[in-house]
Image (cartoon, rainbow, N blue to C red; front, side, top):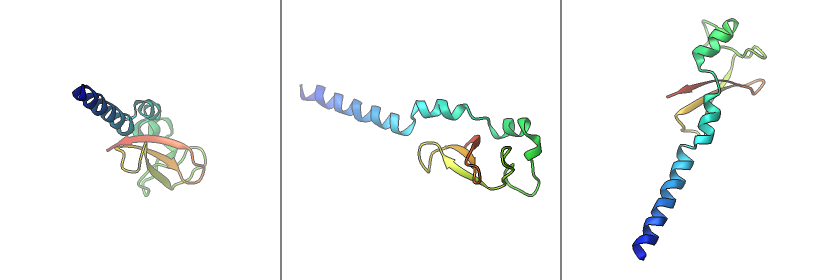
Amino acid sequence: MIYLWLALALAAVAGLFYLITYNPWLDRYWRRLPTRDEYLAMHPQTRSDEAAHPGCCHCDGREMLDLGLARLTDYRRQFMCRQCKRLLWREQD
């Protein structure tokens, strides 16, 4: 009986760890954003040679925020315009 409770507790901890680390709902949301190449294909006017990242297609801002999806160290990255705060594209480390 103790082994059953131990197995259930271990399964609950493993399931919770999976949901916190991977979070499939956030992953679906993240995949709706275009990749950087798709973003540049949709908005070629935002390409800039001197900037590391393309500009914002909404406000023409040049500064981007590199954000993790669920936490700071998440491998799923999303880029947001610093001026208008709109999500623009996604990348994966």
